Image (cartoon, rainbow, N blue to C red; front, top):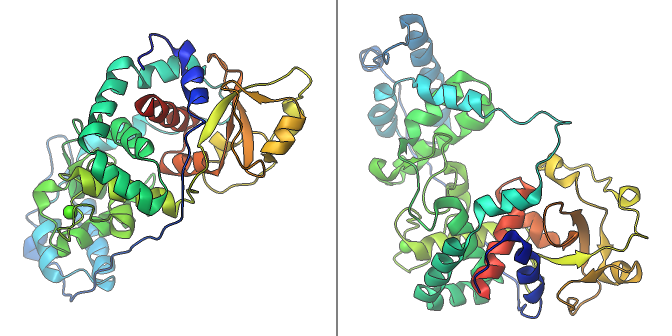
Length: 374
Ligand SMILES: [Ca+2]
């Protein structure tokens, strides 16, 4: 199905309810442990400041990298890897500037309408391309879906959202970007850990030239951070390697593994469009959850209620069909700008939010998945 406006998004989602299937799954991990040493002064002197970077900053950066080397060594990264990567890294001011520009939206700022936000992310071409990917990779996708319970359409949709189906993966050198962001310091805890993780990947034999991605360190078809790669990347095509930058099968298996790890439940829809009668006081049932992650996105949700409870309140699916199990819990998200007044969202929606903490992202992943599946 191809639609011409966001008005039909709710209808697409609602019409999808009939098809849900499932069972449970497991996940994998990777660890690296090797030997150590120190970065010599001679090697440190190779660090060249980029144009516009003063000498003091370059020295500060070099001594910071010494401390990263010590940490990486403690975590088992080999001296060979440290010597081959760290001395040649330069501080990149353009990356630091990008990071400053994308500082988080302050709390209290109003949220944009869903209509234009969905229209930015989903269009007829994106659905068509997604269906083509689905058709091309059907055998593999179905096998992964059977194994994990994560729908093929969700894997394809995330692939579409993250990298436009593998066409836009970013071309920034990851060690350089992560070293810059860690040194810059606004989110040092995060980026220093990612820098050490990328060193572990190099230690494992991942070729340096494939370690290119976004300025913030996400890489490959699913745009994983290095630490996520180490923890969750899977081999999907049977060659024993998790090459998420060149193998769609590996990317799909890794995305599904991420979703399972984030709590994806087999046979449960991500969510569906609903009508909400005026008798429902949405403000009165706002969530009181105190979550560590995605708090800003989740504060827009209602408290959890079972399908049976929503039904009793007079809420009903625009597609006319409730999930088979009326004990499944969902929270309500009011969606101004969409045809549907709101969506009932299950725990599986939270798994998508875990991938990227934005209601616009998670809704758009769900709706594109529905469009691809239709
Ligand atoms: Ca593989």
